[in-house]
Length: 138
Image (cartoon, rainbow, N blue to C red; front, side, top):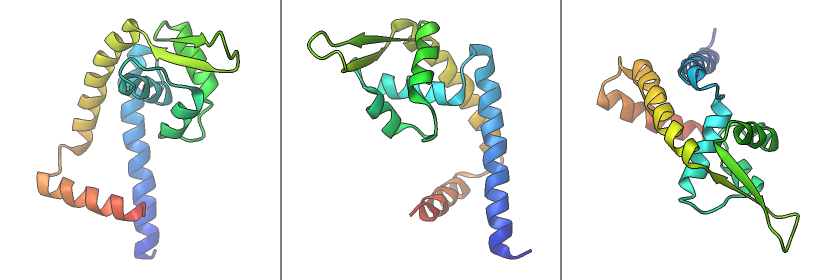
């Protein structure tokens, strides 16, 4: 096996392991990783509304069905949707206080999972890894 094939397989394999650990950390909250991502995007709006396009642009998983994700979060009471009275096509999405509160707990669970993933790496190795991964995405 060539070095480049081994590196790519290693990246994909490692990404899957990390994804599984984060998914497991979110299971007690009955939230998927893309739903967690939506909640973090909405929290980042700092009480300002977001529309579906804004959320979609900022998603880590670009293939996600943003409308479906938001609908599921509405059902859980984590977000709310307002339709503009002047323009019925304009939809504003906000994170609720319940969503903010549970997101704090989710952050802690995900942070613990992330720590488990990287606990074997030194600070210098983490810095180098970030540089290399950034370089791959260019």
